[in-house]
Amino acid sequence: MHVDANGTRLWFDVHGPQLVPDGPELRRRPTLLLVHGGPGSFDHSYFKPDFDVLADDAQVVYLDLPGHGRSSWEGTDAWTLETCADDVRAFCDALGIASPVVLGHSMGGPIVLLYGARHPGHAGGLIVQSGFARWDAARLVEGFRAVGGDVVAELARRSYAGEDVSDPEWDQVYAAFGPHLPDPGLRANVPVNRDLSERGMDLIRAVDLVDQLSRVTSPVLVSVGELDPVTPVGAAEEVVAALPAGSVRLDVVPGAGHFTWLDAPDRVFASYRRLLGEVSAASTPEHA
Image 1 (cartoon, rainbow, N blue to C red):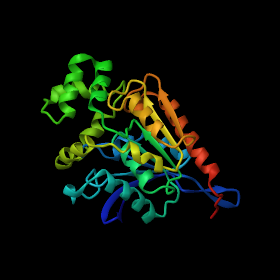
Image 2 (cartoon, one colour):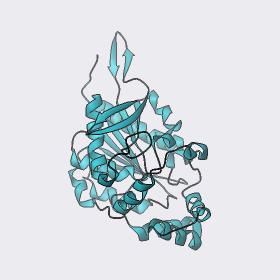
Image 3 (cartoon, rainbow, N blue to C red):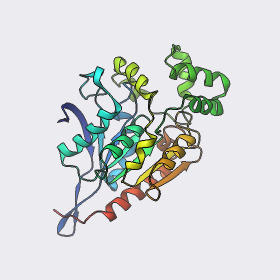
Image 4 (tube, rainbow, N blue to C red):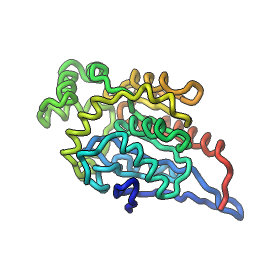
């Protein structure tokens, strides 16, 4: 399905109803909007089918960001994380999604944090999964060194600095992301926007939005795998320290990597359900 939002044609998919029977009435459930990583090389599909289990608790909406997957690839030269954050709000408004719980994974993390800071009060809650608020190349390299050794750390340094690495060399880096990785068959079918990949990484290397996080007013869950080398525990702790006290919870998941829900699904989805329940309880009851 497509919708025009903020001047961009966005593709999305929905799993689970927003309205469910509750006695003689229909009860409105929270909406969980998923914002994927990237840039240019991922779309919503690596969340599937794992996140479908959350349809027992919420309406789950899968979104392809601008320049990714099945959404419009026009305007790559104007693509920024800030415009993506504004598109998240515009997307919700276009579909009439009120007080969403918005999850951002990897690159989606700073996008969701920017959305929360630029549009305070719009979200019912935010989930930063394996994300960051400030790019720190040295922190990333040490993360890879801890899980993969010196050779993998040097390959990661070169790759994330924009230097050329061979496909077999990148495979060594990617293998260190965590114990479990997304289905390679699904990954092979993802459209790759190579122009955006290069520009997007230049923008990501400049990310520092720590000083903006004090404007976030929604409750936030920050979840990170203990073994995540891309966005290590230190990156999650930095996000937590910059958010308003009392509105944020940190969950460090033992034995998990960058795709944390693949390594510890029971633990991770339980933490998501807790936030969804809190947001639902805090909202004004609404029946239709």
